[in-house]
Image (cartoon, rainbow, N blue to C red; front, side):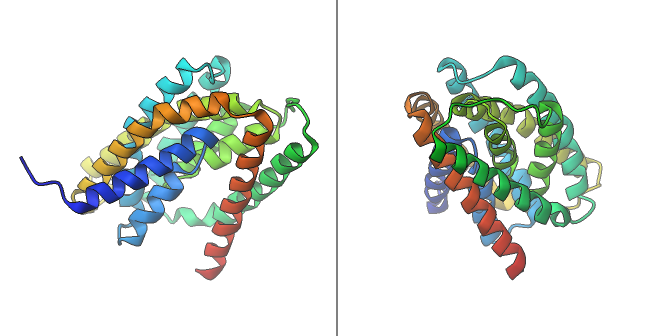
Length: 260
């Protein structure tokens, strides 16, 4: 039996923390995990493929947890799932063909606006009132495409938009997390197809095997606890948490873009 290297436990801790945040607030697993992989020298395509491979397993565990705790709206799930699969496949193709960073400034601006809207709702303490602004099929398609191109982004884009347009927080978070499983499967399959057909020449995936296994292990352990916390956390407190996280992610990514 091969010896487990120390980096496995490091990534297991990262996976646990990332999945706790993602499972409770509907975002940040991909952002946190991808950032760590990139900091260790993985290419954007390798990092995105690795994180999505891990998300197949953590997403399955998270989806089951949210379904058990009644955090999922079925009709919304169908539209987000279909759109996410379509967008994820397109985004994976774009990432292996061109630089996906071109649309990042626009997405960051949208996230900042949605984050401020969510904070305003939390401050006013208003109950969710749905606004027919974005169809979930289109939202899922855009969220899936950006998620594949950025190695993370499904949660911030989809959850923040659903909350900004008035979806109940625990339903928005639970449904987004559940739909993410289907997106992760589609994106992973697209990367594998690109690798097999020679469209994407990259041999670095073997170098991140232990990190990926660590992300899976930590994430699967955290998923059931995160689903339960989403169910029991007070509505207004959950809204505050999500609002601050979205605004913080948007500001951080804008700063990264300007610094780069």
